[in-house]
Image 1: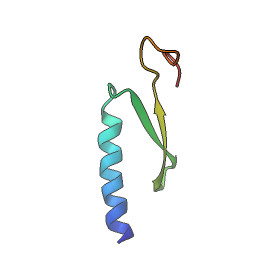
Image 2: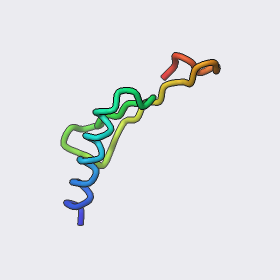
Image 3: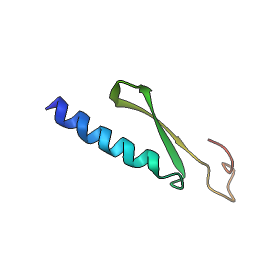
Image 4: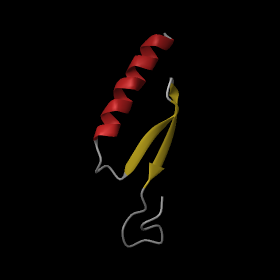
Length: 53
C-alpha cells in the first residue's frame, strides 16, 4: 500500500514542480521521502503579504 501512495505522491510532486505560475512552490524535505514536503505560498498582491513567502 505504501508503494502505491509513494508513486501517486511522486507523480503529483512532479506535476506541481512543473507549474511555475501557481503562486506556490513545493520541495521535498528529504529527496528520498515523498511523504514529507515543504510548501511555500507567495503573498497575494495588494495585501500585507505581497512579496512575502
